[in-house]
Image 1 (cartoon, one colour):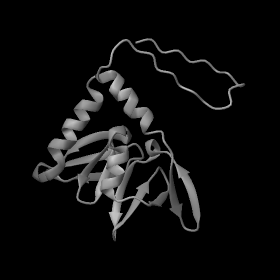
Image 2 (image 1 turned 180 degrees about the vertical axis):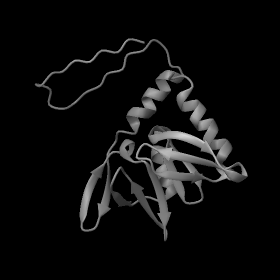
Image 3 (image 1 turned 90 degrees about the vertical axis):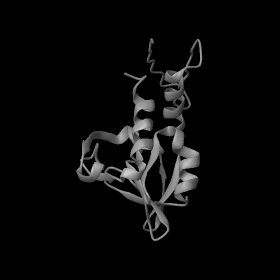
Length: 150
């Protein structure tokens, strides 16, 4: 695959064009990555902020409210876990426990833990425990998203 980068300050907005011969897993990964770049709104205290799903490390439901965790900030989203996964699941998000969704592209390391659980070390060094009920789906998604891109 050949990748070219061209800077053009006269463009009204950033633009990415992807040209390919055939639909394959690599193109699906690229399509999923760019779909994760859509913006959503999140609330933090009294302000509404624009978030990009790709910048979210993980999401957690607390008291029936969904919170998105970024490098140093936490935002409340107006989604349920199910609706968030419906919209952004193809962008690398996967459920890892009853109340947690993780962004596969923000995982730095996967470690084994007691009782066949896994510990996920995020890019910001935060540790998240994967419930073993979700282990197979997580490993399948991890393999699917990264096996063809290497």
